[in-house]
Image 1 (cartoon, rainbow, N blue to C red):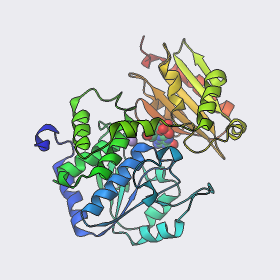
Image 2 (tube, rainbow, N blue to C red):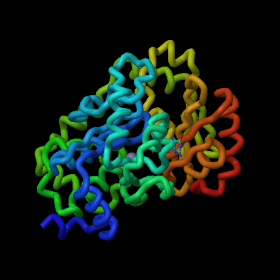
Image 3 (cartoon, rainbow, N blue to C red):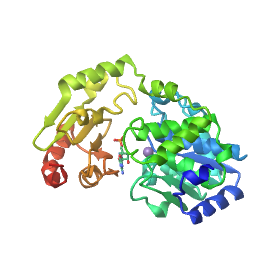
Image 4 (cartoon, rainbow, N blue to C red):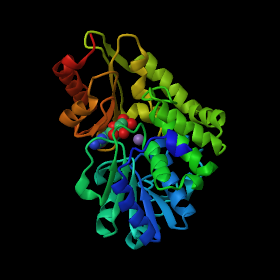
Length: 353
Ligand code: 5GP
Ligand code: MN
């Protein structure tokens, strides 16, 4: 029995609270964080798919347009885009507003504070519908949610979605579409099952997903596909933009507006760039700074014990996990870089010798 090999993670009292919300209501809206990644898309769509299978009206509302690199996730286009930020995609703001205003339950996946849903947070706050959270980030703002299922030890929000379905006693409702969505999230947040996977549980979950016909090789290929645009930007970055400090074991990359324009940067094109310096011998911490309209978007990554979430909290008005965090900076790109360079010596004690 699947229940015998995949050990329960979620507290049974929370499962019962969630069950009551689900049993009592018909209308559900599922939301996830802005600039969604594979885990955000996978977890929100999988939850909606699961609720639909239970006979509920469930719709996903995206804060903004999911990047083109995620359009292979089955059913992503079923989600309503709240704010297309004039990127040419179909914005369904009025419809999304109405759905949220009328919904009976709001399900939140892969984020820990409502502000991670950008302008959508205002719509969510206007609604009195209870909010069910399924998330794996540290430090959820518990006051913002009615039922808080928060497990930082889960490798992905999608791991929690599968565990939730299982612990609800609904493993039989899994199908290829839902399983594929969950698989995409697991692959995203574990670097294709290469990190945070040192125990058997994730592989047991993956095996269960594959029983539904998830196409492992096809999905992996889709995830690795990229546009020429991105490949050329990557080449430029590796050649010209990677700054390294071997004494303090860090690297960083920054891209200004002019560079982004020159390479016709589209949403998602620089996804993962932050990880590139980490592939070098002797580098343990990396940062990526991208100049946006009014802010500098900051991404941080590390290996081992180095807590980039603390760095993000202290200096970049953000947060995240120990090895993957991010935030924002108000000021110039140069100022953001300078702050990072100044902050690194203060965190030197966390570096592996
Ligand atoms: P990314 O670098 O991929 O944008 O984000 C990595 C992780 O850092 C996210 O999963 C999230 O936990 C955290 N993160 C990124 N940006 C922010 C932010 O602006 N605020 C907070 N609190 N966390 C962030
Ligand atoms: Mn995630």
